[in-house]
Image (tube, rainbow, N blue to C red; front, side, top):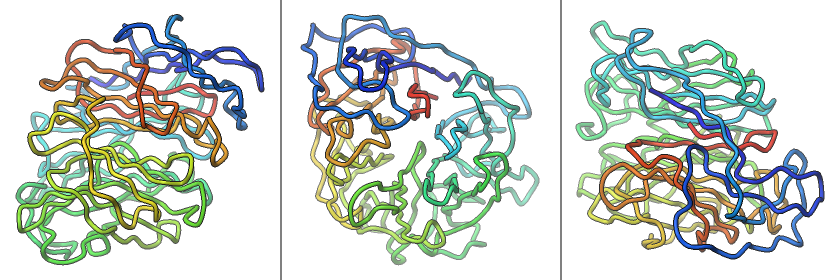
Length: 399
């Protein structure tokens, strides 16, 4: 089953008004912790399309609604997993996920990337459609783990995912030949009409693998970004994880400076890394927030000051417990001016425990992720991955 929460993390306000904003959970919510002070935003500017400021308040009730977008056991799929939520340049809300026909198994399986489109900010949704369709007949082909990257300058949308034949992430062999069935490949589908249609199966493994010591890799599900500030403005950035022959599991950013025509890898960084997210901070620094593939039960955080080409080694953020699960990280005001107070506002969602995938929680930071003073539980029970996006009407969606 896939649910989407459509809610406001802030109480809506008119342009340049001084109403307090509300940090809302995106589902049935309960506040974690004691009362916290509001965070002043007196100098905030209101970018076009986002008519509310980011003053945190914990005293008001959240505003949200939920919809069920897919249910396992339908349309030929035993289950649906691995959500990705994005917004196309025209405002279409794009939801995609794995359709898994064989008992919900990971790659290598003949999974498909499927999705739905909303043209009214998530109020209603079109029919489920294939983005990259798996082949169940032998020789099988599968696509798994979608991640949406939007090129706001050109209007294109990329849906990154794993392409698998006979090997998945843990069994992939070194190599980049797109026809090698023992390699887990990096592929994407591309839409130039705001998600209405897709051209599938562009394989770029040979572009994003530095050498044969990189055994396996995958673009991590959820979303990538396009840089908005400074010398690297326009660069497309898709986070990924790479397993190496020496046993190292590193994070790697897949980068494009020509609107997705070609891609190249960053220098790898970290060890015992896993699915990770990248966000651009208010000064153009990139922050990476990663799940651990080792014993750590907190999020790993790294920074890049050159647009994602090189990264500092990660440190543990002990403010954010995590049971080694995928998470979501977004800048709330995507069009906020560089250096503005609104550009510092981030949302982060994960299963906020050190064991077990429960306690789905959304946190807000108003200082570029240095602190997370406000949090609310949107699902106290079992929950898997989450993916968030800011819609063009200012709502926050979570899939």
